[in-house]
Amino acid sequence: MIIEPLTLTKAETTPGTPLISVVVPVHNEAPNIPPLIEKIRLALNEIAHEIIYVDDGSSDSTPELLAELSASLPSLVRVRHRKSCGQSAAVITGVKAARGKYIATLDGDGQNDPADIPAMLSAALTAEANGANPVLIAGHRVARQDSEAKRWGSKIANKVRGKLLRDGTPDTGCGLKLFPRQAFLELPHFDHIHRFLPALFIRAGGQVVSVPVRHHARAHGASHYGTWDRLKVGIVDLFGVAWLQRRWNLPQIEPNP
Image 1 (cartoon, rainbow, N blue to C red):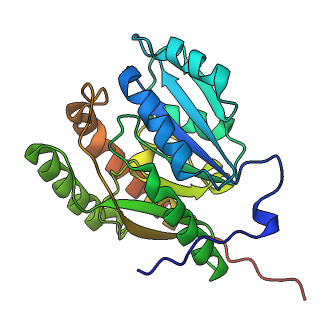
Image 2: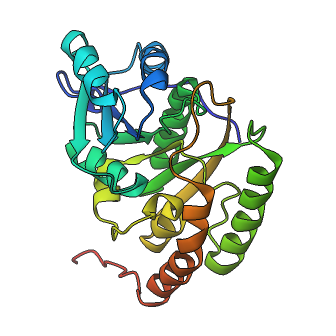
């Protein structure tokens, strides 16, 4: 798809309120935090934004580091879970704490590129101007910098998920997504929701637009939300979302005469 240059109206840039909130869930990712924050700030330098880090019960120096950074960065908001509740819970906490009209989610390991966010925001504004409501912009990692086993696992999972849920999304596992905050808050919330957002937005009468995004190799540490953990619950979640799809008829509201 062709993405038009980002242009914002006065209504979209209310003074004092961020247009977009970047939500980053982290668990023991201290070395990756400073460079990712700097990349987010550079990417959104000309857009009113805030950065929300949700510390999902980290046991490393993440809490102290975020406290130190927030003291000098007014745009940085930090929220901490007393104990780890999982990535989806951290995303939900971050969205609830956000003030922006739009939410962009990023994995905390630095593999997603914040430089893709402005183009995704532009795609959302274009889709909404053409009547799509609500719209989810889903990142599609066309050149993944992961192990072969992880790439194949995701490929199989996306194929099975797409066949059962018909969400028309080639890469639902990409952590880089953008959507209206209010639309997300109206969705049913459950663990691992972040992997089923395309199907849930379609269920709500919305539209999903996939855009190619960059993907980088992890610079520090290892994933703390493991492949095996996702695999164990993936089948149950998949059939649960399929059940949600069948148990809902979207109302069509008629205008009053």
